[in-house]
Amino acid sequence: MKRFLLPLAIFLVVVGFLFKGLNLDPREVPSPLVGKPAPQFSLPQLGDAQKTFSPRDMLGQVWLFNVWASWCVACREEHPILVALSKQNIVPVYGMDYKDTREDAEQWLSQGGNPYLVTAVDADGRVGIDYGVYGVPETYVIDKAGVIAYKQIGPITEDALRDKILPLVKRLQAQ
Image 1 (cartoon, rainbow, N blue to C red):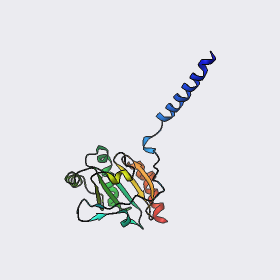
Image 2: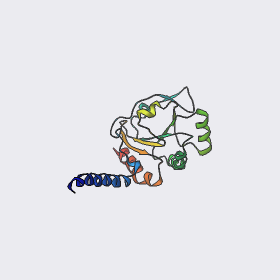
Image 3: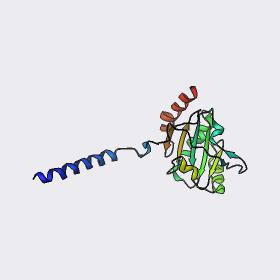
């Protein structure tokens, strides 16, 4: 009988971890980039391929960096929220079109509205890898020093914007 106690104990521990894991929110995965400088890049802009965008351009400002794509279904969910946010002029919103074609991205923004002051084009996804993007949409709050203060995995919701992102932006802007 004692020889069954150890396997039973191990089984119960594994079931306990499984039960705990099922109650976790996958959007709350901590990013190793939070608290570290945003990866640097220089990418062509969507509106004008002769111009580039770089996070260095944003030093001294708090800003949102939204990674999106025209083929992304979840991006359609958050897009109206970003459009409304951009009209409020609370925080500048910059975008990065991820693994997409220029034509599809331009068409998508013309149909749904363009919340971005500038959209960088990451056609091959290399910059996305530097940012740890494993699915779009993802949004980063970047502080005045160019440090990632927050990462939103998945679409921005009204609740996430109201409860997490905007309070953080206001705190960072006051510093």
